[in-house]
Length: 93
Length: 145
Image 1 (tube, rainbow over the protein chains, first blue to last red):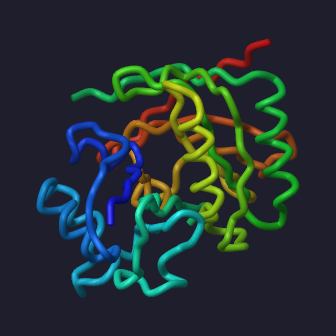
Image 2 (cartoon, rainbow over the protein chains, first blue to last red):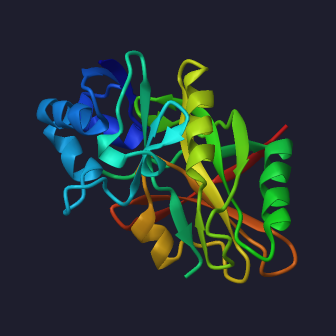
């Protein structure tokens, strides 16, 4: 499947400044493997120590959060748009 | 590399949107995203939109921007050439408008501007910062017409 991955500004420095990258894969796990092979600097931001999705990143396929789908096993269709979003958080303490 | 220090330029309307959303969020912290132009990977300080977001923590002490609000903001930014998400604001309901250790530790993007609105003293106080590698730099804030 040919899909597009949208990167937030903070991760673009690891991908030659690109905001959008065309990748191939049948699942999120597949396309992430393709992505980190091409841009190894992204790996620590996407994949946690346990091999699953990093806890400080949210990944959407079109309008759906993959945590509520099949996580890295979420299947993709041609033309899907994958958005990678950092967790944006803080507070007074 | 020294941290660049753009001036955050807010219209009176944007300032009112930000502060109003902070009051609407009480007793919890409120948060929202700033959109604006970036040049060479740095915000110019101009804000094209202040977008109130949901604090999914529903907490007086912490905030997390609802991921779906972030997704919508990212798409809104994409729709205009040269515009990006350039920062996130949040309220401190009972403390000063200064980044907490949590704010510093969780600062997501060194290019972003981090306005903080303190509601502690009756009159809201909005101040803005860069947070780069744990180092806090206050930015000038200008209200424009």
